[in-house]
Length: 71
Image (cartoon, rainbow, N blue to C red; front, side):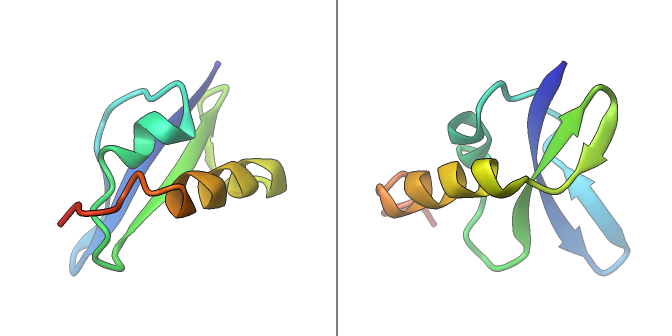
C-alpha cells in the first residue's frame, strides 16, 4: 500500500509525522514551511523519495496555495 509522510530534520536525525496520508495533499497539512520539512512516500513498507509524477503533484499543490498563510 502507498502512503505519504511528512518528514523533517533535527540535529539528531530525521523524523516523520507518523501519519499514513493517502495523498500528497493530506501530507502537506503536516508540513511546516521552514526549510526542514519534506514529503516521502512509503510504498509497500519501504520509504522512498517522490517520483517525478508525485513531485509534479507536490508542486501543483504547493503553488496552488495550500501552504499560503501557514506558519
